[in-house]
Length: 228
Ligand code: ADP
Ligand code: ADP
Image (cartoon, rainbow, N blue to C red; front, side, top):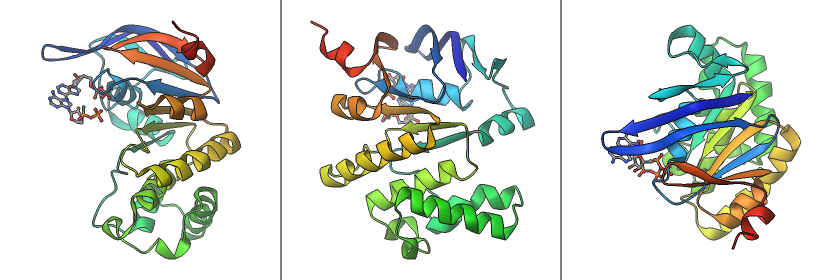
């Protein structure tokens, strides 16, 4: 699905990503694990075209990621994206946040309603809270709305940038369990960012351990733990 060839990114004097080549396995969950500032978000934003690499290229389905225009939009429709805190539009209700793209694409309202019902069931979101605005939702509920929004168009890829970062431990634990079940059910290509080793092991099939803009190790949790 995704391949990075010699991709690097710099911001001013900060080398956010060193030249990097890798493939992301299709239908599996890859976790980007590492401390704050190591380049995880930069990698995610290169994957969805929010950032352009300085060198190298990002291939999606074997073709270079388009830099702009309708071609990039078409890729974005196949790549769901959610970030820490949800990144929801505060002036739209939960339902409006989730269905925004469907309206934009002029889906029939029956199709939109059906898809919304599927997502409510999948994410175990309380349906009676759909009419609430983000500020009226709990942190966990906001994250479930963000997940529904990312999944609305049934994308091939799901990019989740620290989706559980801002949650208190109990809510976080509950969402980790739900996310694992959702990933197993959907079998999509998922890229998930975290700085929590236990979370990486629980949710990831493959873990990319990052430091200072480099992938320093790659493998399952056992590979990382066996490291001296
Ligand atoms: P995280 O560590 O959770 O990825 P950051 O606080 O590093 O989040 O970054 C949050 C936002 O601020 C991002 O959009 C990032 O591009 C931007 N950002 C991070 N570092 C800088 C910086 N040194 N100068 C300008 N913008 C930055
Ligand atoms: P992470 O997600 O692992 O916390 P980021 O990818 O957000 O790391 O950031 C990697 C490095 O690049 C950090 O040093 C960060 O401050 C810097 N950075 C990220 N975005 C920007 C930006 N828009 N402007 C300047 N520096 C940035």
